[in-house]
Length: 443
Image 1 (cartoon, one colour):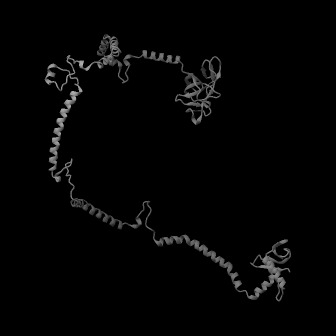
Image 2 (spheres, rainbow, N blue to C red; image 1 turned 180 degrees about the vertical axis):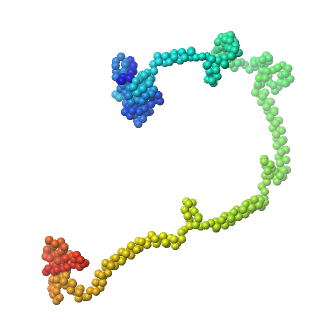
């Protein structure tokens, strides 16, 4: 279906609607969810459902089919700017029910029909079966006696009496003859002219008037003038002060003669501080036995602790607090390191096996064998000679250290003449089996 949304507003232009649920949340079409207005900084532009102007003040739009079934409120707003904004005024509202297919509005006719149905049902009810809010049958409560009371109330013409009472209330509240006007007149009366209910004047001074005259004449009891009251009050209080002064003097004399040791506080306790020695003795008497008891408890605890099995002691975390015996620790350490030491011992033995023959061979070399080997490696023969110039050139080249790999054989290094960096003084070949080098002089 389509055009489920219908709004009517004469003279309106550019309208849009938003859908709200019974809880007041607004439908967010993109997210397909009801949410509080303004969630994630969203505005009217995110909630608006565009309406099409059908002319004549009628606008229509499609109800979002993703809205779940339930009671909804369609609120139509007048868009005042380029885009929908939160400040756009609401101009039309419609309540109804959405069943995910059809939008049904709650019309006045529907309400009237419902009321008529209820009225028909009530008219058909059995009066004897009616009950009050407390579950009691109404018919049983309407007894003959109570019916008589109702008849009396009807005969008493209560509505007329109520009207009469209202008239009196209006008169009391009247601005001319009511209580407010009477109050104003009373406040304006002169005190000397006031009369009591028996017609007697009310301004007489009771201090200077015989009380028997009051009884005889029935004078009014209005408060007398201030001067008379002050005089009477002064006389009365002055005498009281004199009496109190005498009492205080007597008490002072009595107190001065009291024995301090016999003084008592408000709780009847003696207020004299006892002597320090007596206090100390009393305190010792109180605490001595307690201290002896504590000392006894400590002795018992010490004996109990001394008898504890150390191996069973535990720390606050439940771990045993006794250090394990040295022998056990040594045994565990041996078990851990023994295999490692054996492995190291085997490696040393293997190294000895590999190098033993070589070292023995070096130890057995004679001087003659060393000379023969050197001569063979250097190209010199026994009795051969070398000029001093040749020796000087070799030493100079060796010190200068001008070396290069021989062309075509990188395993042979050539020592060059430092004067021209090109003449080969000697060649040195590295041995692949020994740490020695084979040297051949080229000059």
